Length: 62
Image (tube, rainbow, N blue to C red; front, side):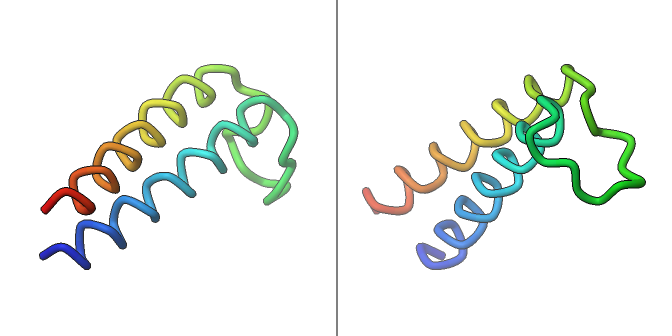
């Protein structure tokens, strides 16, 4: 359970950072993405990244 929570937390953190990069226009990949330079994805990415951080912290405490 601990390992699964750690993997999911890391995946959520990395995906959240990618969404933030795409939403801010820093990451312009893939070219056909609807998320590019759409600022709402910065918010959603930050939320997902925070969920990932919380999951990582919980996985270290158990």
